[in-house]
Each structure stands twice: as structure tokens, then as C-alpha cells.
Image (cartoon, rainbow, N blue to C red; front, side, top):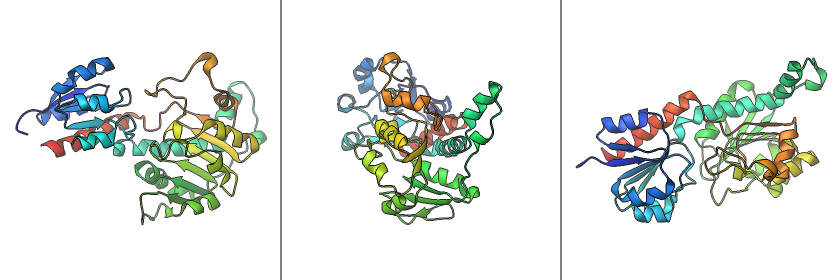
Length: 317
């Protein structure tokens, strides 16, 4: 670098990210509580911006960022960044899905085990003095066919963790080819529909994938299925999921993400604003719900920042 590049942090990160950048000669301005309206006024002074999911980097901000050379997203999803427009302006976009792939893989497996073994229901019953065994008879993963849609960092991490369960693990990825290995067998989407017992979703949220898993999509599966979603809430149409749960086409669901999440992923609509489909989910003992915590471990908190820092440093030093 001919001069020190100035980086604006507009969201919270692990301290290792600004520390590593500073050690490599970057000047870091850490403002995780900044008012979004202020960003547009000060962004011309910066060469880089670090974000999570709280801020949306749209054309207006990009046009104001006269000196911006990169946007760093601490995490996997880039849906809050107009990547195409940024790249047209010569701005590099970085993310760090390698940092939370292990956590997402473990979470997806944990949610499946919880669902199959009635762990939430049984736990509540025991705490209330009920010792009910027959009604909590579970299912085994062994022998089931698990269909993974999206075989990037997250999908492959889930596939790796299924190896010891003696399941038939298959995967479809529209943009990847020749990735069959000891963990997964590459298949067509038609094969996914034909063979799957358990569907696990691992695609990014884009115009192409928004509400991809809807009634029409679900109805194409030959068998009744279970659905796991640790990707993005708006990939799965909740009303259609509930419709198919009521009909028995979907036997159960494990959802770490919901279409009703706010942009920052931290709040649901509250009070009487709760959608009817969501009310069904929270009352069902065939559903496991978590608040977008797949990928949200102490270890991933460090790794997300480390991977992102390393990518930025390699590109600009």
C-alpha cells in the first residue's frame, strides 16, 4: 500500500479483525453503533467498510463512496450488498463463509437429531413430572436419504458431519459440478425430488432463491419429507410449509431462520402481528425452532473475522 487505507466498521465484530488489519497498516475507525443516515455523509473518507447484516449497502451509499475499494461482510450472506453494482465501480466484495461452516454443519445435524428423537417435547414432559416413552419413540438417521440443496461451505460441512450415520447423502448445486466424494453423491434436482427423505437447504438468498421452496417445489417430492433450513428465512415460504405439514407431505421441520425476521435478524414481528403460519409452527411438536444461531458459536465468532481479515490483507498489501 502506498498509504494507509482507512476502514470504517459499521457493525460489531470480534476484536481480532481490527487488530489484524491495524497490524497490516490499515487505519480502523470502529463505529458499530453508527446511525445509518450518517454513513452516507462520511463514507467518502474511507477506503473500506466492514459490516454484518445491520446496514444495507445500496447504490446510494456506493455512489457516495468515492474512494471505496472494498466491502467486507463478516459472515456468509451478501444479500445486504448490491454486489453487482459495487463490482461495476471497481469495489471488491469479501465475505467469510469459511468461518462459520463448521458451526452451521453441527447445528443442522443437532436440529435433525432433536427433531427425530422428540428431544424438546420429551424434555418438557420430564421437567413436568411426565415419564412418557412410547409416544416419544424416535427415528434413526441411518438408512435415510438426505438431500442437500446448495453444496458450498455450509452444505458440504453438513454432508461431512453425516458420514458416521450411514445415511445416503445426496446433493444438488446448480452452479457446481463433479463434487462427489466420500461424504456426498452429486445428483440432479430430479433425483433430489425422487429420493429424498430429509431436505436440507443451504443456498444464499438471491432473486433466484427467494421463496424457492414453496408449495409447487414441495409437491414435487415423491416421498413425505422433513425439511431443515439453516440458510435464509425467505428461501422457504412459511405458509406453504405449514400447508404441507397439515396435509402430511412435510412430516416435520427444523428451522433456524424464518421469513419474518427483521433485516438485522434480531427481532420478529411482535404481538398481534405474528402471522398465522408462524403461530402454527410455535404450537407444533413437529417443529424445532432456533433464532438464527446456526453459525453463531464462540469459535465461529473468531474464525469469521480471521478469514475476512486475511482476505482483505492479501488483496491490499
